[in-house]
Image 1 (cartoon, rainbow, N blue to C red):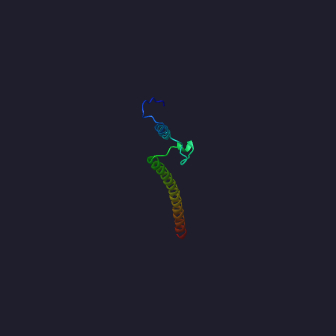
Image 2: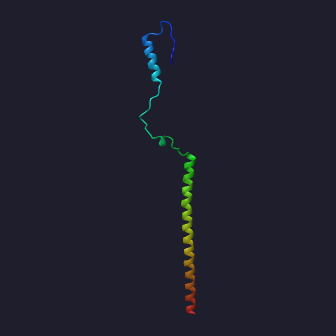
Image 3: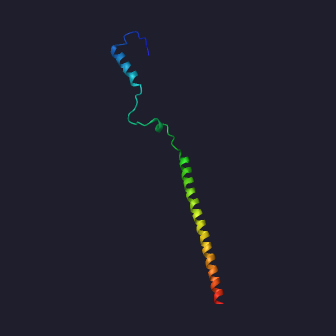
Amino acid sequence: MKRLAVGPMTTPEYNEWWARRINDNIPEPSHENNQSIEEHFRVVPSELETIKQDFERRNAELEMKIEQMEEEKMNLRLDADVQKLEAERLRKGKS
């Protein structure tokens, strides 16, 4: 940045101040928060995406529980059928 100044306003102190002021505006890299570029550009999921992931996880858990309960129900029906057959056989045996 070049400037042309004419008159008594440009003293050496003013020029020194001007150079310092310009250099103070130049951003310097911050060493406080050092992260890799990958971390810096990592996409943070939105609240909606987080809720959706939680919903899908919970849904998968419930589907597994439903499958387990259906298997248990089928096994209980088989047990009931076996009990009925044994009861009928005992009744026929007594007759």
